[in-house]
Image (cartoon, rainbow, N blue to C red; front, side):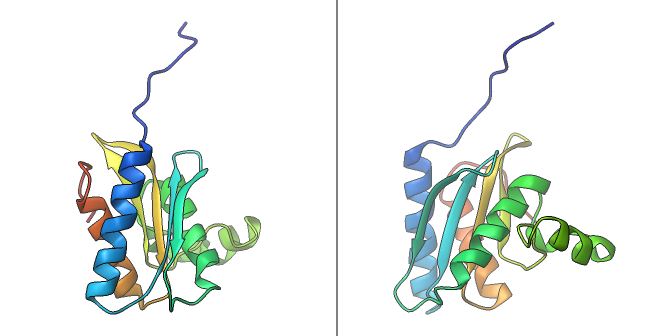
Amino acid sequence: MAHFQTRTALTHEAVLTMLAAAVKKAEEIRAPQCIVIVDASGVPLGEIRMDGSKFVSRKSAMSKALTAASICAPSANVPEPIRAGISSATQNTITFLPGGLPILKDGECLGGIGVGSGTGEQDVTVAKAALEAIDVDPVG
């Protein structure tokens, strides 16, 4: 029986690279954002609230990141029939709002990124830019 596991994990350099790429994309599309990156267990690794973003969107960005890391899929993929129940059961920690994407490497979920303060489409665009800045699996 194995007592230990070896896992791939995000480095602080990866987190900083992702944050910089996300901020750059948000500036390009003129949509200031709150951006949160968590590891596979939901521990925050990095975040920023850009000037001009909605401060309450930090909470939704965190929920999006936690959701994506928890389900290893985009936050918008939470199935419709369970959305209200899972949101209530987790005190709104799990959300179905778009803007949360998993961080996947060779099929392993390393964490999640959550972006909030723009439209759902803008949030996803900024999150995808962050993922594209590091060597991870693309998310559909």
